[in-house]
Each structure stands twice: as structure tokens, then as C-alpha cells.
Image 1: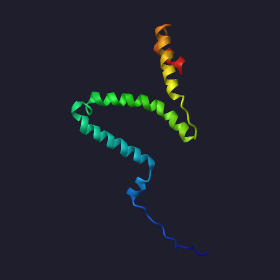
Image 2: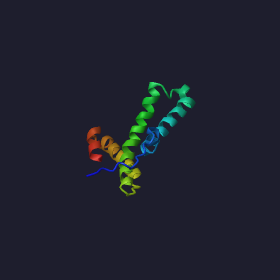
Image 3: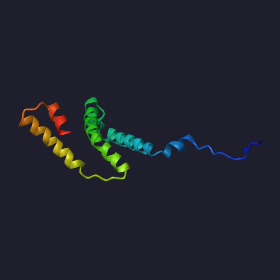
Image 4: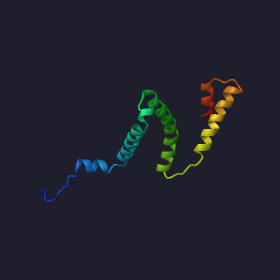
Length: 112
């Protein structure tokens, strides 16, 4: 029995292996946008605690909506009804709490 060891394996540069990963592009893009706005709007409170909590709060709401849509798109589906569903859910919560006197949490559960 003999072993063949004539094959060559190429070792890729660790930086090159990182750069071919698609999620790294999103991270680099996010960091670049943050640095841009930190330079441009840093004096207006962008990098303060209040400013950071403000844009992270908005981005959390958008991420809650974007994750299911991204999963559908990865699966090959295309769903345009997300915007109307968000609006209808908000209106249902508002009507249940204001008109019918429901608690906010009960209205959220009913709207989902």
C-alpha cells in the first residue's frame, strides 16, 4: 500500500479568505457609513449616548421587519405585502387600545 503525496494545496491569505465572505461586506459597509456620519454629524450628537440610542431604536424596528423579508427572498419568494401589513398592524393596535380600551400588550398579541 502506498500513499500519494504529490498534490499541492494552496494556502490562501487569511485576509483574502475574509474578503470573499459576503457578510464581511455588510459589516465593512456599516462601519464605513457610521464613520462617515460620525465625521459629518459628530458635532450634532450623532456619537453621543442619546444619538446612538435614537438611531439604534429605529434600526431595531426596521430589522424586525427586514429579517422575515430577507428570509423569504433567500428562499426565492418575493413578498410586497410587508408594508401594508405593518400599517394594518399599527392601526389595529391603535383602534383596540383607543376605541375598545384594551391594554397595549393584549392589542399587540391580537394584532400579531
